[in-house]
Length: 88
Image (spheres, rainbow, N blue to C red):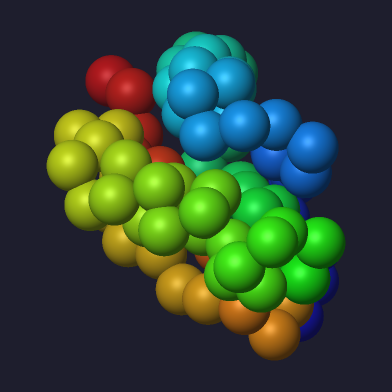
C-alpha cells in the first residue's frame, strides 16, 4: 500500500477532542483537494479497557459524515483509510 497524501493522527486525544479535530482536518483536506486520508486511532492497548474508544467513535463519525465516500480498516485495526468526496 502506498501512503495516502495526508495522515490524521488522533493518538492521545479524548473522544471529544478527536472528533473535533477529525472534522476540522477532513474539511481542510477536502478544501485542498485531498481525496484520501489515513485516520490513526490506535488499537486501545493503552486504555484501561484494552479497547479503542477512539476507534468506535471515529467509525461512528465516518458512518454519518457527508464528506466520506468509504473507508477500510488499516494498520492491523489501528487506523482507517478514508476516501473523501470531491468538492466541485
